[in-house]
Image (cartoon, rainbow, N blue to C red; front, side, top):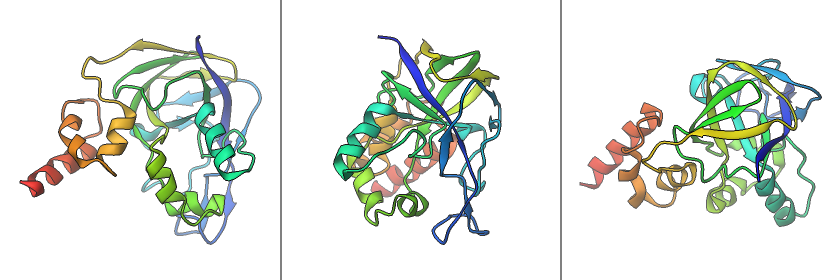
Length: 213
């Protein structure tokens, strides 16, 4: 089965006490849009990002979350979870996001995207959902979604195929990186095998391994 884009979502300005930005504004509330949207090297055109110190940038230009994982959370919490509910730009269908290999390249619409790292849950996410223990539960579930960098700009719309056109042989996945940096430190040596993993994460892995002796 070919993976596809179920929805393309753009952030709207949300002002709330839980917003991570110092100004009290967040772009975590993303809404589906009709038709193709331009994706540039610095992100999705029209997407609002509040706290740029921790969101956005080349290694986090696009965020993808699997529709199947969203359905699990909807059942777990007994509530509807609409596309964009995780703050994702791309809601995907039949794409193994957690199993995506770091450095893997996706052809989506006319854009070429590269898997970089997992999403780390934050207090803004918990506040947006109104679930105080969401960070703990999200971490335990370990289905974090994937950040993507843009290798070639292009347009992406709902229904576009998601085709994996290149996959590194090291095999280090989004799920492994997430678990290594949260609940399973024994996986940390694996992170050093993934050259396309952002250097900040690789350096964190080195420090933690050095501290463990």
